[in-house]
Length: 162
Image (tube, rainbow, N blue to C red; front, side):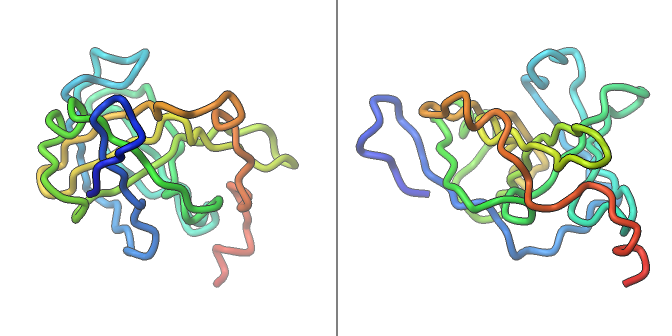
């Protein structure tokens, strides 16, 4: 991680993992601060949706039916981007380096014939060394980053055959 000298807030800039294969079965992440809107939900499990859903996964509350978010690694569905993590989030995650960091973005489904959108303004950052996670609002994110069109449809039955 490198410090961002242009920011007035202490931050680190991370490049999201894009080429690491993700094996989601059984991964449970502790969200010490919860997720905005769901601060009473301390843990989420990352679950596969099936091959026809390609790079998309489910992030489901542990021990509850809801909430369930559709998520993806950003590099799999849109252009790569850098992520800034403030000192408080780094401390919450126990981050000491950019190794073992997984970045996910929450995806909004918009209908069968429309591509989904991804929230790049507030990615979920996971420290895979201890499975702690938090949603990190990007300090310079504009409203246009709240709903960036993904390049990959959520459901494609052709993917299940390959």
